[in-house]
Length: 435
Image (cartoon, rainbow, N blue to C red; front, top):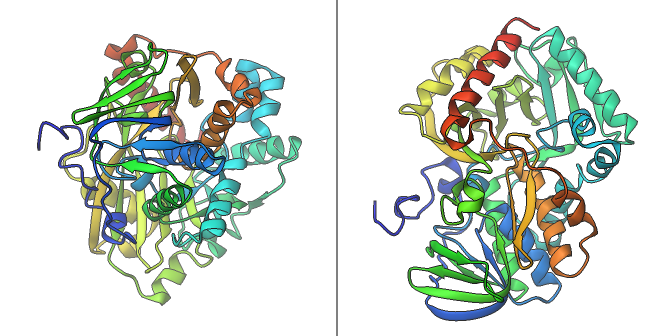
């Protein structure tokens, strides 16, 4: 591990299935010298790529600065599930922030998925996209929760979901574990790293510039024209957008305590036969249960089961990822109890205490977005568009999110991990006993 990339090893992608099956390994040059752009985006994950691509399409001169490789963090490691909504429910948002805010959020919870599908079509991004996602219920209490969620969403005019009874759940999942579920026909799943790489290519086709292996060590956002500094260069711009999320670290101290890094794990089996794959997931949808600490899984394009779950508050990697996940895999699919695991990896997402993503400014020309709390695939793309709108002069949607109150973790950085662990124990007990 070098000093330059202490947070990212040597800066290369983790040893995931996605990295092993990436469409391209092209390395962009590092930032060198002093350069000037209209907009500098820090972070080449989904938030940064979405914001930058929208801006480049509008004619802005944009650079992305990435400390490692494109999609190195959560954007290239996640479960690949295109799930609508935020972590916090519409009911929670209504209770905390009022009906007007809930109406606003309901109007954009499906936008991120639409942006993803539009990008895939417009730029012919080869990322193995497949439609629909399924939420599964492990208990009757979970089924009631899903029924309430369905009714809530329909009350806002969102009608892409339908319940799946216990008798019908095996049409979708070859497991005896579930009491039913709910399918979302507007969800989907994809190869997340290849999608990020495709967005990067699209950004460059629109005139954008990407600097990889360029770890940001300082951001002077108090200057009239903010300056982003790496170890080998600087970028001075009219506007900076900070999209480091769980991996921004202490570069911008004002943002460090706003979110907590949380690691989640994924593993990929060896290739399964067509017969076995069809038996496990007959409709090739992606699945996640609705427990507090959930399992999520899907088939890859080459018939591997990608199975994820578990959380480690604070962002540490488990010593043995396979051992951590195999127990739950065997519960869901007993026939895979002894299946060979070809890849296993871990990665961090940024958790906000409210489970609502945060968007704001440190001054008039330095924006940030983070804290998707496990729903970043779609949320980051919606936020990227909203940030681009604000930078281009239309701050109407940005202003709504900026006004959502920020709720700090109780006890601050020192106690956020133990507080979250205790909370997870409580919800795990409720899930286990069907409460």
